[in-house]
Amino acid sequence: MSAEKPLEGKIGIVTGVANHRSIAFGIAKAWHAAGARLIFSYQGERLKEGVAKLVHEHFGEDTPLCELDVASDESIEGFFRFVAGQTPRVDMLLHAIAFAPREPGTLEGHFSEIGREAFRSSLDISAYSLIALSRGVAPLMTGGGSITALTYHASRCVVPNYNLMAVSKSALESCTRYLAYDLAQRETPIRVNCISAGPVQTLAARGVSGFTTMLKLYQEKAPLHRSCTQDELGAMAAYLASDAAAAVTGQVLYVDGGYSIMGM
Image (cartoon, rainbow, N blue to C red):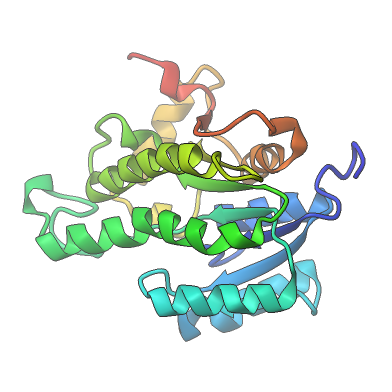
């Protein structure tokens, strides 16, 4: 390990890469540049070819990747069997998974219209999955480790149209705190944190009604008059995975140009 390569020799699992604009892809690039070897997941056959092409082009043809459906315990178990076949140890995991079905009230319209099943599935995939993946990776983190999840400012205040995803992010942050306490009790403690990213031009973000307005508000109201970049989010994730963050756990770290500190 060196100052230039703070993650040299470490093994990381990256979930949630969909394309080159994904925040997860930016974090993967930062981890790789810092010296880490990576293992990737993909969601279903529809995304497999694109993710595989992206991963092999940027991280090498021998970079492992495996299907992972976080709504299925059997899929999660199979994924970690695959990981255990690739490496005896894992040092960090990125949770970059979120979902809200396209139904009335979920990502636009009246919040009170959200259906029971939409609510259940969003909380399951967006928040419970952090618990399930933490449970699956913990036995492989034999030297301790770092788990990082992605959240957004709407977890603690109203952002019109973010609706169900805001509730899911609130649950995710609470899970982060409880997991941070729980996994710190291990003989080799595991740290769990969230990065709260400002708006970034990703495919998922563009699915939120009013996203362009969000970006303009950050330019007008944030102390730095902007949101953040994929590279800046990657740098924060590399810090959290490194020994420099050895005493940081259970936290939500904002990378948003300072927008979250403003009252008006």
